[in-house]
View 1 (cartoon, rainbow, N blue to C red):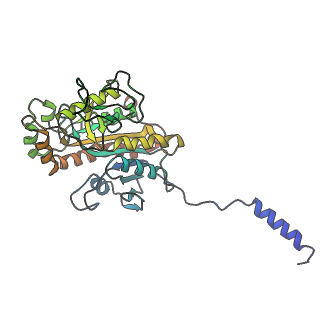
View 2 (cartoon, rainbow, N blue to C red):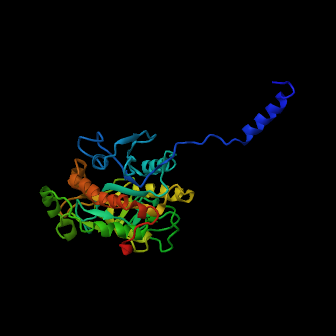
Length: 355
């Protein structure tokens, strides 16, 4: 090449390179239709005594594994777009796991529905072990002031009261700092209407346990599907007095609209993460559902004390098997409906009134 043309060629080459677009990333995020959020697995993911995740993995064919830098790897059914996760127990684990997943560039979760499907304690005033409750209100049981009952003022019924308040159930209730969340009531009602008539699996061996709750007619029924709200607290509390507190705490934070039915540890953490991430468009907080199924009662039956009953529960929940089955049977009914009608539900959140 002529030494006179070389500078011109070089200039043209630099100009072409400057205008050329960067190589496109051919890896497209996987569109996820539904995320099943479970909190624990007791052993292997398949083939042994199940925790919350195992039935979902086996029956939904969640066979494609994705490494996940948290408590447990992720598993996907690549054909249906259903993704399963295990967050670990407690709101710290659930919030951090959900945040990490929502930020994962491998997945498109912008239209995904989220279903928490886990076991819980249940208020015998409302339901029996094995029952499945759809929550509209999530109430946090950790964010609070506390004075030991031995030091609290006379006339107080509890030493536990809201942050930025001066007494239990202060009429001047402060604004929520994460003590209460309301899920999309339209979606909750749709899920309930879709599943309310499901006949849940029962275990004849549980008749004795239910029969102990004399004076609690709902606790003595076979398992059923209902709507009922969740109190999430990192402390595994138990007993009639704390059960009464949970009921009042729920009514206090929901202006009497909520009804405490189930107790667990994670759901305010999971939904707080979704709420913070929603403005980014990575997730839609209006597509979040919580289904808790009763593995045990949250208070002792008449004739027993709280410590005695908790000791028995610590040896193994009487309703573990039926509650895991209920979580899958009820929850999968909703997941399957979403997947089946994905062209519709991708852009339009289902409503009971639209059925």
